[in-house]
Structure formats: structure tokens, C-alpha cells
Amino acid sequence: MSEEKQQTFAKAETEQQQKQEGKTPNVVTAALVFFIAAVLVASLGIILFKYSAALLSILPILILIAILLFIAAKFEPLVKLKEYQRAVVFRFGKFNRVSGPGWFFIIPFIESYNIVDLRVQTVDIPPQEVITKGNIEVKVDAVIYMRVGSAEEDVVKSVVKVEDYKKAAQLYVGSTLRDIAGDLTLAELIANIDKINEKLKQKLQLVSQDWGVKVDAVEIKDIQIPKEVLDAMHAEKAAEQRKLARMEEAKAHMAEIQAVKEAAKGLDEKALLYYYIRALEKMSTGKATTIIFPLEVTKLASILSSAVGKATSQPKIEELILKEKDSIANLLGKKFAESLAEVAKEEKKTKKKKTKKKKSSRKR
Image (cartoon, rainbow, N blue to C red; front, side, top):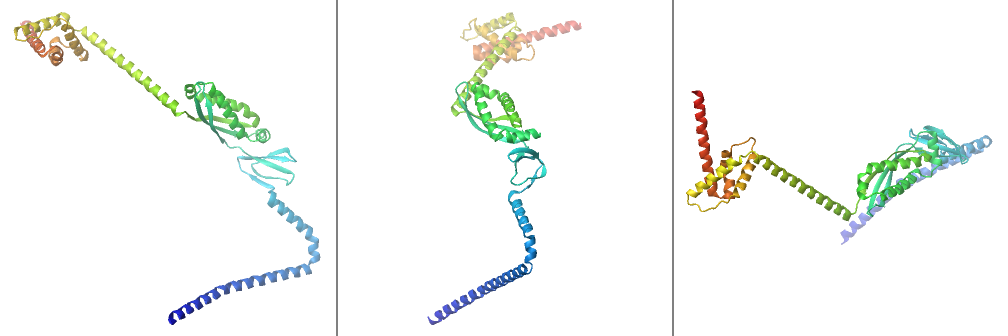
């Protein structure tokens, strides 16, 4: 325990010494500062005592210089304007001149000035709640691009004729926008945004001429439509699209029917009836019990007419029968289709033989 106490006491003494060493520089610094201050005060006293008469003679000048320096620091009589800035200067409250760009001088306590920015100013119109002709409430957001004219007269008007031309333009466009939207339906409002923008610009330009302000553009940025109205519009548009799709489908179907009719004109009715009867004869020689009514000739004509309509050139009736064998089987039965195909093949062979005979007779 004695060793631990000795270590503790030694540590405490070390810390105390460090603190005293750390305080020593501070004491020296304070003493040095006090000495310098005392020397300066003593020197100033000697100067005042020795040159008091000379100082009293220039004291008014020193006081005047001090006052001028105070005024210069407080009121900034020398003002610098940038290229896009102008200053409307008032003397005793009355308009005196337009200064700038560059440096210009203001007489303190006598003259005051207002700085005017000639750059294009963007004035945002808060979303306006408007009710359209169809009693639909929407929010319309717009923006104005305007600037003060560069002519001296316009610069003066922007300060003298209106307190805040941006605020005035904002309120005017908001009220005008509500009036215009109230005379239009929602569809008309959306469809005629460009015309509304131009109308707002013209109306604002007429008013802002007295403010010395030029209006570059007024634009509607956004139209916020209630979700219920938007859903109804989408449903109406979808129904219209479905209606148009059905109309186009009907037109295509009519065109197809017309094409079949036109193609059917190319079929020889007598030849078709001949093949039909021959097929019935073949079926009657077999064991088939299927009965084909005369009305089926119309169906057969329809199948072959469709095939003619799809063909790039006018095919022969035998080729059509062989090509559309499966379609004929589905509609009139497999047995009838096979019999009709056999008749077509036989006729095809017969026609080939006749063609060969004609060619051989011509050679002779």
C-alpha cells in the first residue's frame, strides 16, 4: 500500500508541475501586452502635450474626415451597377435621373435609388383552381416570362407606376385564366392550350405597357385533372377504340365477302354442276349411304370461290377441287370429297390427252 501511495503522490506532483509550466507562457504574454500598451499611452500623452496647439488647429479637419468616412461606410454614396442593371434615382422624393451601368454617385441624405433588373424574369403562377364549362374542377399551373424594357421611360415606369410588377402580373394572369377556362369544356381546354397561351399573353401585354414591362410568353405548364374524371376519360377512349376496331373488322369482313363474290364470277356454273353430278354418280355406284342435297352445290361453290380469291391467277376448276379436297371433306363429307377428286383427276387426264392430240395434228 505504501508503494501505491508513493506512486500516486509522484503522479500528482508531476501534473502540478505541468500545469505551472503551462501557465508560465500566458503570464509572460500578458505582461508583454501590458508593457506595450503602457508605452503607447505614454507616447500619445507626450505627443498631445508637446503638439497640442498644432493638433487643435487641424482638429476640425480630422473630425470632418471622420464624419465623411462614417457616411461613406454607412450610406455607400458610390454605387456600381452591372450591365443588366439600372438605377432610378430620386432627389428629395422626386424622380431625378436613371443611372447605370457602371459607377454613379449618390448624395447621402438627399438622394435615394431603386435598382431595376433588365433580364427576363420568370414568374410562376400558383396552381389555379378553375371550373370548366362542364362543371369539372381542375388545377391549372402556368408561368410568365417578362422583362423591363431597356428604354429609360420603361425603367422609370417599372418603379413609379407599379409597386411590384411581378406580383401584379401573377394576380392578373391567375384571374384571367379562371375566366377563360370557365367558358371552355375540359376537352376544349386541353385541345386549345396554345391559343389560350397566346390570349393570356395579349391580355397581359395590354396591361403591362403602363408598367414598362414586355411580355415574352405566358405558358400553361400543367393541367391537373381529378382521378375520377381521368378514369372516366380513359374508359370513354377505350370504348371508342373498341368501336373503331369493330368497325374495321366489319369492313374487312365485307371486303372479304366482296372478294369471294368477285372470285365466284370466274367459276363456270355449268362446269361446277357437271363435277357435282359426276361425284354423285360415283358415290351411287359404291356402298355409301350419304345423301347430298342440291343445296350443297352452293357450299361447294363457296369453298372454290374462296380458293379463287386467294390465288394470284385464275386456276382451273380441277386444280381447285384437288387443292381444296380437305375443306370439301369437312363441309360435305369425306366420301363426296374423294369422289369429286377422282372425277377431277379423270377430267384432268382427259384434257391432257386432248391437248396432246391437238399438238400432234398440228405437227402433221
